[in-house]
Structures are given as structure tokens and as C-alpha cells.
Length: 574
Image: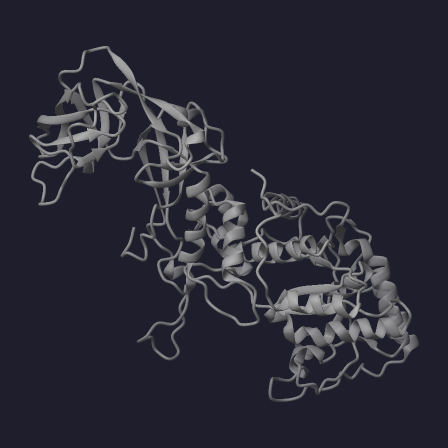
């Protein structure tokens, strides 16, 4: 289902105020161009959804364009698999970039030429220190760095070395091109940062053409300028990088490569969620360590995992609108995200019956071999969706918890000599039950009051307090139900706890929830076997479930639990 991006009117935030002020001053001539620039070295996670809705949403609302650009400058970690997955995820969220699909690798020739411009202007030099020497000379937050002994090489020598780097004369790490800024700057990002490094590696788009590759901080801002981006939106960890962003562009503009105004970098707070990790390094650990079943594991906070879990693009849109955009870092409770998904699914998910812990119920006065249809609404708040037939026969499945031999006070479900209504069907009265040698109830018996079928005249004349759901044993289909919960059992995975020793280190993997996944065999309405993968339903009383994207088959139905009907964690556990 496509996402309606036209409504509602977006909330106001500080980035909109900046754009409104720019438009009022005529800075960009009313033009708004943003970009979503992931590195193709992994899969998108929940935090990327926030950025996607922000960048594409602003461009849409101001009649501009959002560029889809891959900052593919590190061939060792990048792969076409990630490119394809990222494009699919952005489309899944409901956006399209039209003609604006770009790659930093499209600009490798220009990036190289601009680097020579910086050398000629005395703004860059080839450094031949080892990585350890550069690290030692970089300084600390409280101590300035030291100039490289190669910092004052002549322009000619720098150009010669840089061209020989490009020609492949040197091994990885032999030289590096650095910006000449200020090794005493209090901002460590301005202490002669790297611009180009030697890396003899195959690139997923350019192959073996290049053996030197631009660094992210350089390639990113230049790509923005080449694409005439107006507002370059990024998360707060890049705030200290903004002076470098501006330094590169100002010098290249002075050299005549770009015209002013130059792209404006604006930072906003990244998404921080409890009970999860959004670090790419940690997500890789989860996958490569076998702690999850891949990037699309429904417990993973990736968009691939969310989609397979049954989360919706509309739920993510509601979530990003609800948490808003600000400059302040904050920790968002996972409950907020789950509530948004629950709220969206409540509107869109049709209702179906599933018995997750089946117990046999025999209607002793119902004719053998006979069946009839009862009718249940597809959505109780949407009568226009109509009703569906649910077959009833002599032998049914009910939930095991819906019968108790010795119930406590206030128990209104089935009990010896007690009456309940079969939802959408008849009132029945329990007449007996069987138990196995261990004392477990194996079968319940009841009589039907044939004058009480729901939907027939006079059926509601007699009232009972209990109402239970059921399925005809002759018609129900068996399915695998995967019950997913949060991947971590602690709200801050890996964080120190009260009472930890001062030098204690905690591994975030120690906080994995051992009960985050379980699998059960259950009985479903027959139509649930025919549903297409990724079709979402509310299983009455149980929560929201989705037909698994990969494993669901008509002959072998597989459903994943998306969210419960309520926040079970906030109420003391699932």
C-alpha cells in the first residue's frame, strides 16, 4: 500500500524555519534541494527512516527535489547488494527520487581535479608519515597537534607525488593527501584532515580504474556542491565537521569551481531508541556473530527487519512526526514506536481468528458431519469491508486459557457447568471434560443452545458474561507462529549498571533477550493460509501479525507477531 505523502500538514520545526527564512530573503531563489546520502556499506536502520522522511518530506513540501546519492568512497566495505537494498527500502517508505539518482563515484574525476586545485593553492600536501606517526602527532582535545615534517613540501613535489599515487606507484598507506589547515585548532577535524588515501581495491562501480579514493568529509561536501544542494541535513555528530565542510567549499569557490551561495549544512538530533542499538558496527556484530538470523531478522532494527516484522511505512511516518525534529539529543522509548505501529495497524489490519494454544472442544448435541457458517466482521470500525464466513462444526479448537476446571472468582470463560458465547456463534454450556494421567485437560464437552446464534432474531435475548473465540477443527489450518519480542532485555544495551566496578566493561551482547523469539504451532482461519506474504492482520485477542515475507506458503503458513494489542513491556512483561 502506498504512503499518502500529501497529508497531514507537517509540523513546524527549526529546519523549516531556516528554509522559510532563506526563501523570504531570496537566498536560493525559492529553490529547495536536499539529499539522502547513505554509504553503501550496510543496511538501513530505524534512524535512517527519520532522515529519509525529513529529507524527502521537506523537498516535497517545498516543491523541490531530494537527491538519492550514494557516498561510495570506500571500496573495501561497499557492495552492490547494499545499494540495491537501500533503494528498495527508500521505495518501501514511499519515496522516489525520479531522475536524481547519483553516486559520489560519478564525480571521481572532478574530485581528483579539485584536489589538485587545493594543492596548487597551497591548501593541501602529500604526507608520508605512517598512520601511527600521524596519530601520535594529531594531539588531543586539550593539547595541539604537531606539524608533519612533510607539511611544507613544494607545490610541484606535492603534485608529482599525488599524480604518482593516482598512477598506482605506491602501496596502501605509503602516502596520504591532507588539507593544510591548522594543527593547533581546538577542533580536531581541522588538524590537517585527510583528503585522499591509497587503496588498491576493486570498486563496485569503477572497478580497477582508481587506486586512490577521496575521504568522506571531502567527497560529501563537494558532491553536495556539484548537485547544487541547498540544505545539507545531517545528524548532530557531524556538527564539529561543519567548519571543514565550509572550508573545502569556500576554497574551491574562491578557485572558481563553485558559485555562492554554497550548500548549507544543518544538523539535527539523531534517533536514539532504548532497548536497541543503531550502531552499524554493533549491527554487524549481531549478524556476523549469529545472534540473529540475518539483516532482515524481524528483531533487527533495520528497515529490512521492520518490514519482515510487519511494521508499516505509515507507522514510521507517524513515529517521525510524533518525535519531531530538534537540536537536542534525547532517548526515545521503544513504546512510542510500537504504539505508532499499533495505532496504524488498528486502522488498516483486517481481523481474523487464530487459536495459539489449542484445546479441543466437542459440541455434544451438534450433528456429526454437519457445519454452518457464522459471520464475523472484517473490521469492526469499518462496516464497508463487510463480513466473512467462519465455519462452525461439532469439534472446535478453543484457547487453552479459555477453560479452567477450578477457576478463580471473576473468571467468565468456560468452566464446569458454566456458559459462554462462542463469538459470532451460539451460547454453549460445559457438560464435562477429559484429563490425561498428568492431570492436563485434553478435551472439553459442551451443549449448544440452538436458539442463540448471533445475528438471528431473538439471539440476544439471553445474556452471558463470557465470550470466547474458536475455530472449526475440520476447517482450521495449522501454521507456524513466530512470536517476536525486543531483541534486548535492558533499555540501554551495554551500559554500565549501578553497582558495577569503576573499571568494569559491559558487552552489549550480554543484554540480549533470550526470549526475543519463540515458535509455536497454532490453528488459523483457512483464509489466512491463502493470504499473500506481507499481508497484515489482527489476530483477535492476540495482537498484530504478518504473513512472513520469505517463508509463508499456502501449504505451510508462517506468521510473525508484529506487536501485541497493548504495551506488554510497560505493564510488566509480555
